[in-house]
Length: 75
Image: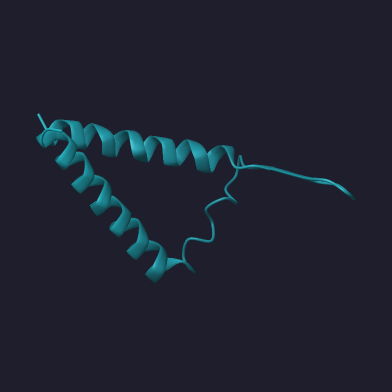
């Protein structure tokens, strides 16, 4: 193990705490996640299909930005 592993663990820990605090205090304000325009929802009599396309796209962009910031800070 080297110092990079320690930095990664610290960053992941801080990110988890941040997400936990965000969900704890703002869970009622984040109800739109999963129900954005572009999220696919098909409901039939005995069938339900849900694919949160737009939500996954936004989360992917956010994680990409955070990883780029993390890589910049650990150089």
